[in-house]
Length: 458
Image (cartoon, rainbow, N blue to C red; front, side, top):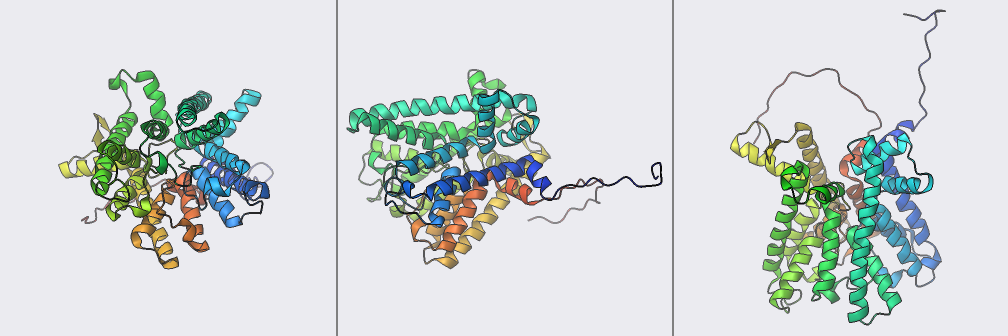
């Protein structure tokens, strides 16, 4: 029907790009891009480099993306950048770990003590809050946990560096704060040229950093639940149970695998005692879950160790954490799906609960997109360089998993190869599904179902 007067009501007009700026997931991706851009601009300043000259735009963008995503670095952080540049990198690591919208919401709470509905929607999408009413509480809790854990790590590292390694109090404080931030945010950036190889036999340094990596990699939902229900495991949610089980299995399995493959390798673990070997293997298994610190030189590691580390880097840490990868919950959901299919079960169950079909579809999509990105990235780097497959796959997986481990070929790659790694780091930090959603500007809801037919599988 025509309205009164015989004229059709005008259609509402949307400004071009309005969907991009109003959709929560898309704006989170855009926020990460802005973080990278601002960090890169600051690193381009001559005051950011030890040489006093402007660094190349590619190095600045690569470093900014690697810092915000907690992934690779193309130059030696301690040697190339001044204190100003290192502080900029530290800020990008912290912002990338907390999340762009979480940081913005925290700033809004500090300034105005209130959050608008749009900011709450965006922060809920980033922190995976269950409702708008949870956002303010979640943001405050995220900030409290982050800064508390980082302060404790920094205090332990400060005392160790000051009392044992003859650092001045000021230098020990600076190094401890830098590494506490990069540890909890699973970044792996270090002020030392050999990363943490020089501390490989120091359990205080290694276990403190590993503890920060684990706490940051479990995910804030798990940490919040453990804070209230630590002594009552029967009340734990399915997410917490699956995350803890997967994290424990992968850490133990990774430790055993690295120890077995590197035990007699004189260039890595072979010259250490039994205790130091197990400590280094545990640290390698822990930090491969997207932290990126290393106490062994992966350039000298056995090829089988690289494969084991590839698997750990690809899986990553917990959901809504500072870690990357496809996430432990994704891996465990697919594991339970395989188990259910092998048993002939009609549903996928875990810990007395049924996993929803929507979660299963999302896990499958994330895993397959991750594999596709690794294949494409590996092929691009193989075509652009003369490095071996195990080195290239290790580098690509490290970039996608937001890890930062390297066999030492990052700075040897051509500009095209480094650009590929930049894209992988960006997608790996924001998530394949998030990027896909950001690119899909049109959304539609289908109001019908097609006839069902089952193709032959296997």
